[in-house]
Image (tube, rainbow, N blue to C red; front, side):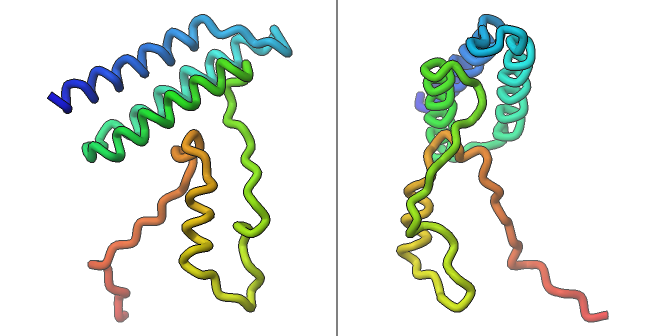
Amino acid sequence: MTNNLTRSRVLQLYKRLIKLSHTWQAVDHPAKTAEERLYIRNETRSLFRKNKHVENANELEEHIREGEARVELACHYKNPYPRLVNLPTYSLPPSHNRIRYKSEYEVEDMSRPIYLKSYEIKEETSDNEEPSKT
């Protein structure tokens, strides 16, 4: 049952974004309407394709929330592009002679808005890989 509800929410979000890409009107520069429509359509397709293999319910819910947040921000501010983020100064990278504490990493993660989660670069390291001895 939950799987069907999640699937329908994902499909509704996809349809909403595609419809938005057809009806979008650029406010500041009407000549850029076609460019912004294309951006919305391409961004939607690429992110949905990138995340189509996600099966974890919590991760799916997070992606859905991110998509909904991005739609609401785009409609409110009339700008389809991601908004800039101002992080607190205490969450900036430390100097080279100081060790960062776990709480500093947690604050950095908490201060990152949900609508930018898809832009994070996840470094995946495999524990099974061993350096070759040649």
